Image: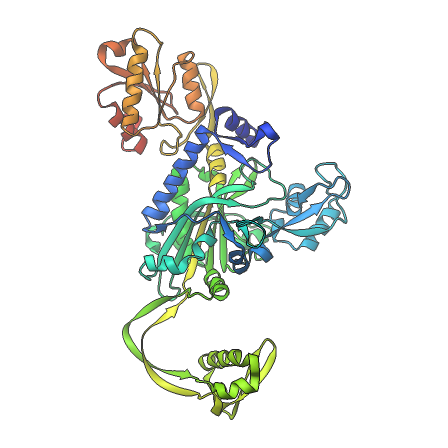
Length: 578
């Protein structure tokens, strides 16, 4: 059984996740989180919120899952949010073309290749349809838009889309959000929520799905002045797989501190480097195995057009590297696009330390001349003259000035523009912030944490499987058992369980089967501590506390038990300290 198959079997059997709507045949790419999975998901989201919202001092919002079409026209998703698709000429099944190439060749990032080259690779390697094994040679590789379309309200007059990322819900509301931040840069806005992509061929359970959870942070900065607190993470060692190393025959991963990565130019943006350092420590906190983890830089062909530099955090599961987070310096692309399409102001006012006097070129076009001369284009000509005066005042040095609108030239006498250069005092300027974005795939992180925490050993001559989850992430903190359901042991165990819940601990109560079986059940879902009530407990008011990883046991008084378990779960105490 492969690691992925073992994980999926465990997940379904123990209630972490399972295919949705199976009573009706299911729908590929949709998964339901069971009781254990929902708790694990919530704990990981809380840990993310603690690190990227609370500790960084950022805001958090919750935007709608459905947004109107103009939002995605502005963002570029309607035109460019595509994956490569190839359709089998025999059975009609559709497949993700770049994935077929990656599965059947040594090429790791076929997504970065042009469609034509992917088509040639399918032919050259004799790649067949996975469904019917017919050759896919000469079948066209086309683009398929991943957006889920819907209608807002009755009829089809107001098209909308399920959001393919949570980021646009932040960008489109920037004018309002900047007011909440008192228009003071830098500031960050975070969001945890669902995103939807109509994947061509969902696979590998939570890895490639059609509905998933993202945790995204959009950090708005002044690119001229704002610098990250790099000293806070300067010594964090990053496992880096750069674009240069990927393109070199003998290239490989290198380990550099955050400071070294910036100084040597391996990571171009200090802001991206800062979040790589912050995130490395966070991944360790939630249970990602650092021996199966790396940061991979995007190759030129796969980097988004708006990003000057992109890195992916990747985890290894079942021999494959899985992207779990993307880190991008997005510049002002998103805010510029929404400003252009909406007509709203997507800038903030940057106050100068002291007022300054500058020369400012202005025009006041004579509309009584422009109207008869240019008709319906008069307003556009006036706007173009104003833009030209700001951009290139020297263009007004002659007797005439020419502007171009929609490919057509329009010439205006300079004396009809009322061009002038005046001295003005300015207290500040409007600037459009740049954006640094760490974008986390929560579903893939859950998959990674479960895979990396799965351990086996031998206890009392029997093989044991357990999840080595950090207590902070474990779905349940403590299991409470009566040794037997008689002589008052169950009553005492029930009271203890209630007291621990009242203290804020996540507790499961189990009185079914042999005590060893109950321990195994809790081990397999990652419960770090178990409390057993036995006959001695009825006499001395003490219980046996068992630690998951070592299976060691110690006797502790019932009085103060909640405090001790809280200290263990938080790391304030170790089990050896008891």
